[in-house]
Every structure is written in structure tokens, then in C-alpha cells.
Length: 118
Image (tube, rainbow, N blue to C red):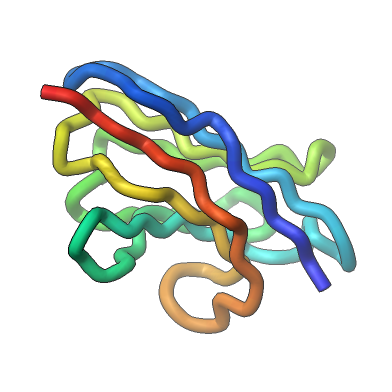
């Protein structure tokens, strides 16, 4: 069993930045690839970014490429999502999950709200 707890969400103006954190705990939590997803109001959940367990490889959705950066610190069992140049369409609840991208996402956090005002 792996527990994931997201933090760092909030309200920010368009063009601003936020850094989300996802703290993992439980069974061999540092050995999992981890991903970020988001669900905007009235829309389906979508993939945002992923990082392998070593941190050597990353993957991004086209909509965030060049603006968001995913990273991890295995000593702290934490994965980060640095978000810059935020847009109102980035408004969503952001979730972290185990797995690299879509599929094999066995464990999920509760989510953190990000609201970008225009």
C-alpha cells in the first residue's frame, strides 16, 4: 500500500507560478514511477506529467510542455510539479498517482486545487 498526499495548490493570477508537492509513504514508495493528472470542472481527468523512479526520464502532455517541470527527491519520497506561465485553462484539481503516464495507476492522492484567475 502506498499513500500519496498532494499540497501546494492555491489561487494564482495568469502568468504566475506554483509548485505542487506529492509526498509518498508506505511500501517501497520511492521505487514507483509517479505521475500528475488533473481534472478541470466539467472535463475528464487528463494526464499532465510523469517521472520514472530514478528521475532520469520524464513525460509531459503537449498542453504543459515547456511550462511545467516534474521532478522528484527520493530521499524525501516527494515528487514536485513546478508550474510556470499558468493559464486559466490550467485550473483544475491536480492529483498524483503511481505509474508512468496513463495505465498502472494503482494508487492516487486526494488532489489539490489549482485556480488560475485571468
